[in-house]
Amino acid sequence: MRIKLQLVMCSEDGCEETVTDLVTLKKDSTRIEHLGLSLKEAKQLLTTIQQCVLQQQVEAFLASHSTCADCGASLKVKGYHTRSFRTLFGTFKLASPRLFHCRCQRRNTTTFRPLTALLPESVAPELLFMETKWASLVSYGLTVDALTDFLPLEVTLDVKTVRHDTLKVAERCEAELGEEQWSFIEGCPRDWGNLPIPDGPITVGINGGYVRDWEAKKRNFEVIVGKSTLAFTRDDEAEPPSSMRFGFVQTFDPKPKRRLYEILHSQGFQLNQQITFLSDGSDTVRDLQLYMSPHAEHLLDWFHLVRQEAA
Image (cartoon, rainbow, N blue to C red):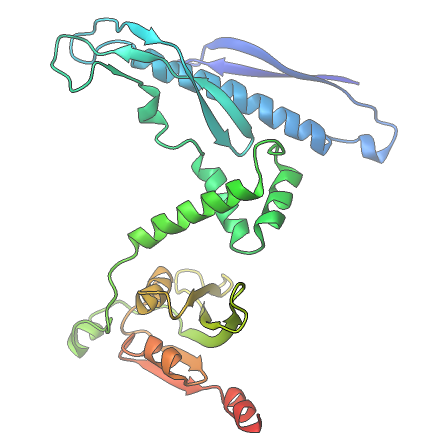
């Protein structure tokens, strides 16, 4: 069996403009392993489609910026260059010409690259998301192995790249985090009574532990981790409980309470909502959960206390 796959580009009015042959496959149908696409064929197909689509999109963008926005005159080209763009389906070289500004208006610079406006970063947001998501769960090396198993990234992804991209995303998230507060309770009981009926109760479990320093073996640092579980949402009570996890190094994190508050806020927490905190009652953990809600209930995990007494 011979299968030919084509990519058809259509104009806004629906007319077919270009037809590109993507790949031609020869498939047998005599054994189970011959059925459907193989992983290698799927990777090749994704890379080819991505390249064709990106090429068309970039060409359309550059064409729309090849004339002056003020007078409509064609802009002269100073030089032709390329730019790398990393995506989920491979890294591609894209045309990035440098153009002269039109002289009809005064400009701060003589030339510019229009593609810079379209690509402020050299990595696609979706690839950054996948790298960061996996790197938050497993090691950088396992992240590379997992992504390259199913995506055509063998040549363009390594441990250093994943570490760098994850750190960049983490720094951006930290910069967007609000200021630390000693209390997140605002308003009065009358204001809380006017709030909409909240979702189900939230249960937050918090625990701390000491981790040995990798370089200075005799030094430890405290790590606090937790899990926030929303019992149900009133919009759709059939949905499974919403659970979110958090963690930070107590001695280095300048915004621990803000971090916990943002977790609760992302689950739709309101000040008239029932919330229960479970912890071992240590100072650092106790201070973290205080003044989060006027209706909070704080319970001690007696297992930890008995274990400490036994020790």
